[in-house]
Image 1 (cartoon, helix red, strand yellow):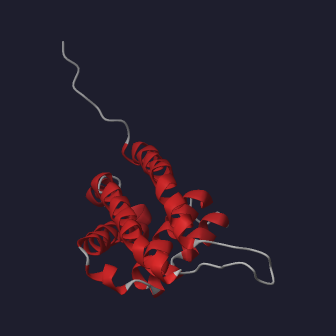
Image 2 (tube, rainbow, N blue to C red):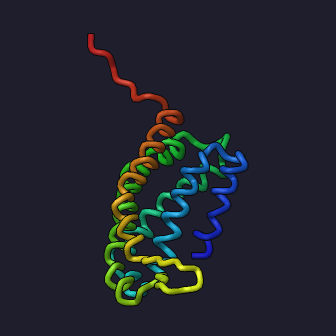
Length: 170
């Protein structure tokens, strides 16, 4: 959890133009991961032992174990590592997103029963918020938000690896 929260620095780096990543992409990825990790999985302990949680952590870990060395090596990054960085996301991003959605979905009964993070009226601010409804809306929007990040990664892949080449047949 601590390292995921600290990864908010990636959003600030993007905002300050210290990296080429668009701030919106960095923010969406950080917010999605942090939400699933802290407000869902950490807050609902029985989710931590599910297959979805294990698969999620594996997908995230494999992605980061490749991404951070490629950042560290930047200009002297070996071709195989660069290729791996811009290829491994193809299976891992959908696996991670599906696991995130599964954890949120599986958490809904607990969120509803405990009224997690919900605010009922009346109150001094005359404001109500139902976290379970929020999660349901997020689940509906998730595929569209995921598609934006996934499509962005394919654009990055094409920039970094070039177009696929085929032998021309005579």
